[in-house]
Image 1 (cartoon, helix red, strand yellow):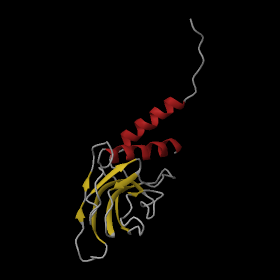
Image 2 (cartoon, helix red, strand yellow):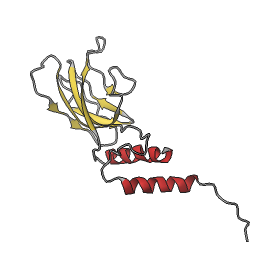
Image 3 (tube, helix red, strand yellow):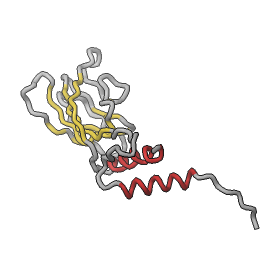
Image 4 (spheres, one colour):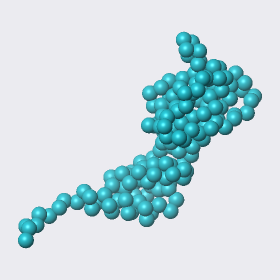
Amino acid sequence: MPLLNSAYPGLQRELAENSASVLAEQQDIDLPLDPTAGVTQTEISDVSSPQLPADCLAPHMLWERATANTTDVFVPMGKFTSGGGMLSLQPTTYLRLWEWREDKVNLIGATQEITVRIRYENVLPELTLGTDPVLIRSSTDPLAARERSRKICWAPRKWRPRA
């Protein structure tokens, strides 16, 4: 089971990084204004306040709306994917763009309180029994290959004299 539990989240992360969803969840996060700076925070992470959901592996999509306008619809935000870092733009009334880098969502910041709806890949539960369901569809072969490769890497090597 330890080798399987090592391969299981690795396969899920690889799928998530290639935009294949296994187990998606959705949550709304309210971003208040910083009274000193006059803008919302520019990142959502495991250590920010508010934080990313504890079970968030990677976000798929983000939407936004002004927190005060609870009857408004959520508007999709653009995903920034240049790889060179988030654009250095002046904050406006909405966030508009987001970037996922180093396990955090980077934002430009907004001049009003914003509610962000995040749809994300959540972490699969650890397998504890041989009867636990594997929640990645058709994953038997990839998991077996990962587990087999780990066994080969971790197997003790026999010493052989050189000829």
